[in-house]
Length: 260
Image (tube, rainbow, N blue to C red; front, top):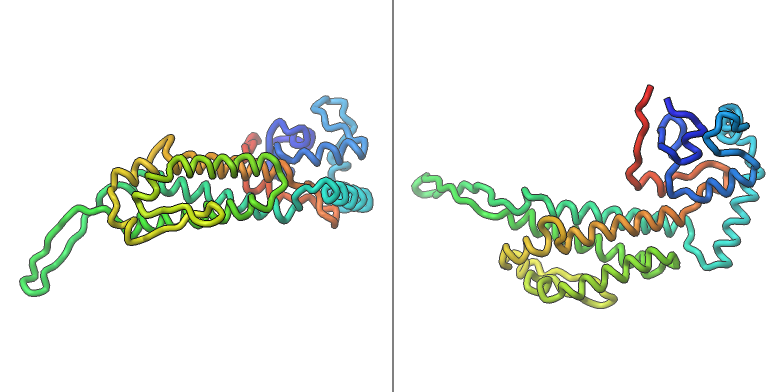
């Protein structure tokens, strides 16, 4: 079983202790302010009882003071609020998922379709692409892309802005191919879909854009993950009630220690 000390040091993650993320840098600064040693040394004075006191509210006044100071410093520095960072992380996570759905091999394989002649009763089996599923996946991706850019446009977090700018430039590089499948760049760099043109477009062009590694979808998936990570790094650790807030870290993949 993992220890409290290991969780706080960031060596690994254990749900039985708490959802501490590698990105919760504010936790270290807060705990150091309480003179708590978070090292893995056997002589560390931080014990399970200390951790229980922190969790049950014994340090609530200190936490509230810390939170108020942090909030004031963030506002003065023009930093993003926790709510804004959480929203950005969520939107970017949805973009990553939508892009990965577009990259699935099954989406780009022909499906058997059976049609029946109502007059003769004869059935005919053909193989066709599932254009309804393809269109749905593309529109979901476009919606997620646009929401991610909307959130990033209001951000003051440098790494979020950097990733969003990269997304826009990469989209511009692929503009000709996107136009061929009914996707255009509109106002504020948002994408727009012509569904009729999409469903009549060349399947090879669609696969070039969305299927497989190093495709346009693959690159957007990576940047969606980068924005989620950047938002998590900028997120706060404790809320005004003195409770640990893991809204951002829960959006990130974690390594769970399963040792007994």
